[in-house]
Every structure is written in C-alpha cells, then in structure tokens.
Image 1 (cartoon, chains in turn brown, blue):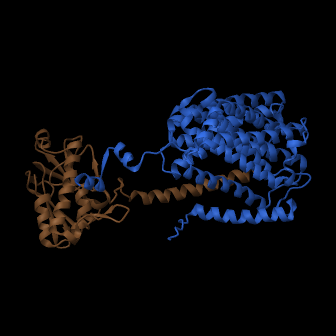
Image 2: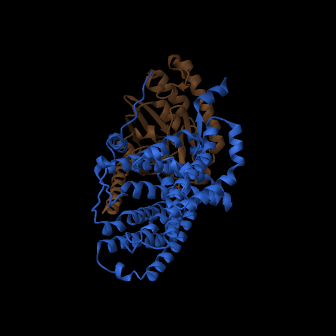
Image 3: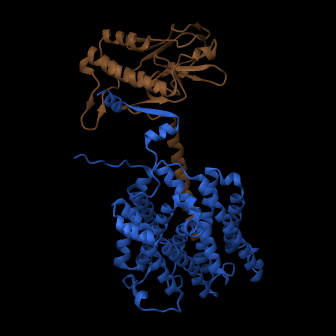
Length: 220
Length: 395
C-alpha cells in the first residue's frame, strides 16, 4: 500500500500542477506576444515601414496588413477609439486611411499604398488599446489588397533602412518636443536611465498635437 | 529600504506548510525518538524513509554519473550543457539522502563510525563508504561553479586538472553504490517475496539507476525550463532517452530471465496484492516506457518525452518501494503504513531538494548563459532600439 500511496501522492501533485498551469496559460493568452519596454522601440525586421509611421506585413496572398508602429504606440499615450474607412473602399497613397482618437483629439494616418480595403481588425475596434501593448501582431488595423505589390512596396523602408529611419525619428521627436513643449522633453531620468517618452503627447496642447500630426504622420 | 515580499503562489504556500510540518516532525524525532514519529517496529525496521528517501533518492541522483560518463569518458561533448544541472541534482540528491539517513538511524551521532570502525564484510559498510566518497566527489565536481561565481581562478584550475580522475572515481563509486543497494536485499532471501528476490538484484538496481538517470535529467530540465523561462534542450534529451530505453530493455531481459530461472509463473499469475503490484511495476514502469521511448516521434516531442520519462521515474520509484516495502509485507505481517510525521519528513526532504536546486540555479552559473531579452528579440526577428542609446548618439 505504501508504494501505491507514494505514487498516488506524486500523481496528485502533477494533476494539481497541470490545473495551475492551465489557469496560468489562460491568463497568458491576453498578454502581448512581444515584450515592449518603455525604454526602447521594437522593430520587426521583416515588416515594411512608411515614413508616416505605419507598418505593412506582406502576406502569402499579396495582401498586406497595416498598423501603426511602436513609435506611435509609445508617444501617443492612451487611445480611446479608432475610426477606419469601410471594407471595400478604394484608397490612394496619401489618402486618409484611419484615425486614432484620444478624447476629442485625432491623429489621421494616411495610406502608404494604393489599393482596396479588404478587412478591418474587429478586435481593434472593440479594444483599441491593443495598439499600445501589441502594435505588430494583434494590433493590425486594416488589410489592404494593393493595386500592384511590386511598385507599391518600392518606396517603403525595411531592415537596416527602417532601423536608421526610426533612430532619426526618435532624435527628431526629441528636438520637436524640446522646442514645442520643453517641459515634456524626454530626458534621461534619475540614475536608472529611465526616459520619459511614453505617453508624451497625451500631455501636450492642441497646437503641438496638430503640429506633431503634420510633421510626423502626414508624410509620404 | 524597501523589503520585497515574494509573491505567495499555490506551490510556495504548500512549500512553507511542508517546511513547518517538517520542522515539527524533526524536533519530535530528535527529542522523543523514532517511536514517537514513525510506525516502524522490530518486525518492520525500514519504512518510507529508507524505501523512498534513501533508495529512490540515490537512484534518482544517478543522472550525475550517467551524464558525466557520457561527457568525459565517452567524449560525447554535446551533453556538456546539461552536465552542471545533472551534477547539481546528484549532489543535492546525495546530501538529502545523508540527511534522511540521520532521521532513520537509531543513533545518528554514530554515523561516522564506518570511517574508523571497518567491517569490510558488511554490505552496509560498502554503502556507507560509497555514499561518503561519492558525495565528496560530487562536491568537488560541483565546486567549480562556486569558484567561478567568486572568481577564484586557482582552485578552479586545480579542480579542472582533476576532472577525469574525479569522473572516473564518480562512475566507479556510483556503479558500486547503486548495485550495493540491491545487494542489501540479497541478505534477506527468506523475508523477501519471491517475485522480487533474485541473485541479479545488484544488476537490476544498477540498470534501473542507469535508466532513471537520464529520465530525471529530462524531468529536471523540463521543470527548470519552466521555472527559469529557458528553452528546453530537446535535441540532447531525446538522444539521452535512448540510454533509458536501452537500459530498460536489458533490465527487461534480466527480469524475464529471473522469472524463468526462479519459476515465478505461479506467483505472478496469481490474483493477490503482490502479483498486482508486480504487474503495475512491470507493465507501467518497464514495458510502457520502452514502447514510448522506442518511438522517435515521442522522443522528439517535448510533451511526449516528458510523459515517457515521467512514467520511467514513477516505475523506478514503484520498483524500489516494492523491493523495500511491498516484498516484506507478507513475511512480516506488520501492516506497516507510515505515520503522518514520517510522511512530512519525506515531503520536507523533497521540498528542500526543490528549494535548494532553485536557489543554487538562480545564483550560480548552472545553466549556459541565456541570451538577454534584447538578443532574444533579435533572434526572433526583432530589432530593439534603446531610446537611451539613440539619445547618446546625438550628444
């Protein structure tokens, strides 16, 4: 009986552990797939980037997923709602594609390519804050069928080019804020080197917000 | 100063309850004696502590010598990355076996006697010396990690130059020791139920230890990959599983030979407690793992390999408890079942093993350095641009 008792005890522990693991996994599903640190920007190497801070993921079918990059998700702060053009709508490069709303204010993002909207991420409309935690996976906003993939992708940035561009954008943003809203200027804080860049736009005035949109978002 | 209170999870709560009960039982054991905390008697002097803590503890620590032999004697370099954790498991296993022995010995303060009062004709004498020497060897094999941590280069060099003799000594001592635990039961042929008595017992104990060593390394790798968020070395572990499968196959042949040699058919095909226990042990602990581990698809799947090796470990535990307890029940008629304080001491040993492993693995370089979060993201296809670095570029 002792032998069976020992084996039963071990099996009970394993069963309890499995139940705990299962409950834990359920919680993990809701966690973002990429760990985003407030002190750094993440850049997927295989994604295309437009200078208007949108990314494109080229799919097997030739269609593309479009979303906003980690730069936007960091500096914007809270996002209350997203407005997207309807499915089926034909869009031209440079036309407004979707809007990110923060209270009464909006940031209008322009389309990086010519094409047709084939799908909208339903979960992003319900929980727009996904963009803040997971901009590159679950944070996709629209799916577009490009008119001609080869020519559309030519002017976009990828790999080292995108990395260099983002570095410049970070520097440009620092200069922009230090001029427009010096009190929110991202500076290294304390000894741990933490940087207050997250959610900077949330605190700036209307004028700076609009200027940011003009200088950083509405660019092809 | 802020004191960080660790988060209380289900298992950490269980751990602290076990520790509290274990301390209570320990105090009781060393103040009131064995009678107060155990159901052991003159008819049944070896119970859960010897059956599980010592026999299973030593066997489950066999991963240390199996992997060390693979790396240093058979020159299988690829197993090197799992060697430190296997050595640590073995070292902790043996330390806990010694601690558990102190609980079981009537006069624990006499534990040093075999060092000067030699009795070379006793199996116990061999066991005692093997445990002492092998624990010393394991401590020396483990010491480089402590030296590395405290940047003590000289002792590290000395131990490095002694690696091969140490490993050879370790393999010889564990071979002697694992088998001599089987020899312990050779001296009670009339007491042991025939199904488990065999002149092959030392070989059977050794083979099952060789089989369970890699199985324990797999379980330990699986659990530490979970605890420390590391990637499991499946390509190494699946190769190692072949060692388990082959050792179990040889074990199977020896066991069948025993059944024929001792004409055990009437015992194993009778519907009684012993026969049922034998079949559970034989079917689930030997045949099933062989079938599972012979399948390359199961071996190369994380979950499959874990389940197969877990069954091997459970089969091993069942075997040791069957030999040390089940096989003696019929003869002694003592109706032994451990007292709750006995159980808490055993749980205390297991909990201490887990906690010590976790603590040491956290503070010493047991696992190969993991890629930092930044590198990890890079390998996953991301580039991480530090804001601080970019700002530095500007200035």
